[in-house]
Image (cartoon, rainbow, N blue to C red; front, side, top):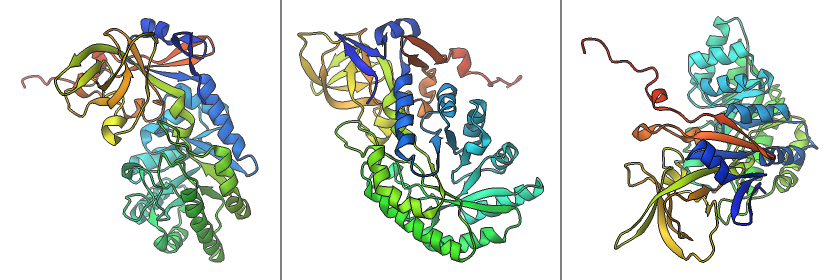
Length: 418
């Protein structure tokens, strides 16, 4: 459920007409619904109320400070994968003891930052990372709390680029090597084992992969405990999908019903890392039609948002519904490519999509763009990044100003006597 709806012919976000926002803010811009964000977080949280748990929102999905702060006020933490995301989470007011740090390529500098912040734990992904973290913690006179990310080799049945739990994945430690790696961690003087981590992928639309992977992890926890290695936290990652088109992903309560029987007997605090399932349908990208173009082979609608703003269609061939911000009766429908201004043939928001005919100057809403939208944006073609706007009831807030041309060259310099 989301709070983008038509009133008469006009598309609203909660109580605010989107066309009025476009007049004030300009296009393109990202637009988020406060009511949807809070509802989705609350629904996910309540689905698992029977077990001790912590929701560490995946900052990679949407790292805007206002949104991270909102989840923090609701009791959430953050799953971060870089020093920059750690900085953003702390600046947004998230308590360090609700932050977990994952990612295959943590640098020494990032380890230092996270140790200084005293985060809950590092999700370690390789032997070399484990040894370096032990060295860094020792140099600082500290002990690093860790979980090892174990790769359970379960197929999440999602896009290959967002499948992370198979043997050929760069992520995690193969489950067949996990006992050996935990024993290594146990031997290191500046490492404290507190948990185990797994994450099998993103946009998963079936509970079976979650059940299969957790069953394997539960067996491993039992083996670890027989070796005297206690596991207090089970971080099961995120990955629950959302409907972009005709998908029917499980509701969080359905997921809870399937996995709680595995989780309850373990006696662990469960860490969840939802991202897309909370923010995906809570945001849209608003764009303006620049031109319509007809060729002998194809019809195009050219808009002012491109792959630099929303790369998912170009990168994954992902589907995003596209709706008019103002519906006009009596117009025919046409099959078109909705494309942006970027000088790449791969710059599109939709291909061979049947939409209501539009005219230059009219607005389109690219739906389900709250996750992996702005966070994957770039300045390609020297395009300033879009603004971000949050609506709460009948009020709106610009939570990120549109970049200026001056922003594009900040930090650059032309050397003298070049």
